[in-house]
Amino acid sequence: MSRRIIHIDMDAFYASIEQRDDPALRGKPVIVGGRPNERGVVAAASYEARKYGIHSAMATSRAIKLCPHVMLVRGRMSHYRDISKEIRAILYSYTQLVEPLSLDEAFLDVTECIEEYGSASKIGREIKERVRNETQLTCSVGVAPNKFTAKIASDLKKPDGFVVVRPEKVKDFLKDLPVSRIWGVGRATESRLHELQINTIGDVRRFELHDLVREFGKWGARLHELSHGIDERPVSADRETKSISRETTFARDIMEMGKLQEVLIELAKEVRDDLQNENLKARTLQIKVRYADFTTITRSFTFKEHMDQLEILQETAQLLLRHKVEPDPQGIRLIGIGVSNLTDERPQMPLLKELDSSGQNDLTRLLQDLRSSFH
Image (cartoon, rainbow, N blue to C red; front, side, top):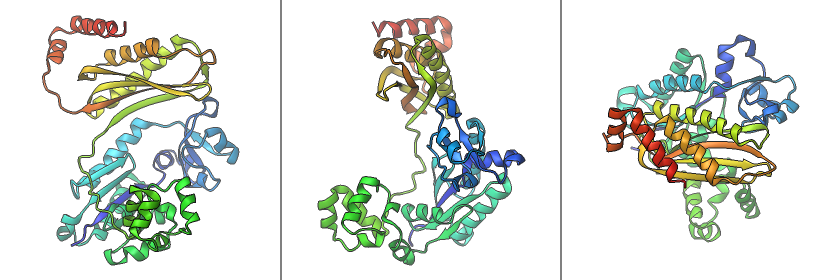
């Protein structure tokens, strides 16, 4: 039996939550994001706002020009995370084979659930109804034999869409869709495909595998598979968080080192909170700096042990900024902090034992050792 994969995609998630929570926003063009005088960007746009050409990642100032009466709401990430957890609880009630892609999107493999529930379509419809009833939000659902097709299916009839693609119908379903629907097809690749008279997914099938590999390398083989509706990637239930980061763009370019240090301290708090929320520790910390001319650099430091102590994260970020970043007379436009090399294992390592038993004295010693490594 072929697999049964469901792709769940919440509709304009952040913006829909704000409209749900505030009746005054319902039916209005709404964007969630930073303020225009702070060089903010749109994190989410309601469907009413999208009619004006507004989309996520657009500068807030541009969005306001497109729709002067758009309603701007500052994001509430902790609130969105809480609601995402409610939705994931619904998904996990059907199967443990859930692969979250983000707060508002996930794959499910329900192949082994068919006997209990009757069909993947029934599960998909039930999830839609439960999400609507339990959160007062809508989602779009795609049901198909693989991840590639299920994701396309969920996007076809947004918002509140429901599309089922049966195994024997996959190739017909894909053939007339634009080739840009294939993962990995960016503007440059799409332009080259059009030069080859490849405009739809079905057009790709006119080419032999070796021709596509000669033209596009290894990705040509992937292109060949996807055009025939072949995607063997499993739903990765153990998908791990690879990194956590926070950054901020300043309303004006900052030249004062003290101000930059203050911002890093606050960003480190947010990163530490995210680590603790996911019960993770980090071994590598990185800061990101973007200068006024948009030149971007990163500087990193790797600890001897995994850790999540706020004081260590803050001090390391400040040391990297102070000793590894060249000042620029034109100022700094953006600064960020991230952690990677994560683990959820919490063995009683010597360092942690010392910190737990001796408290601030050992923390002070650890900070001193950290500072000495930068001299």
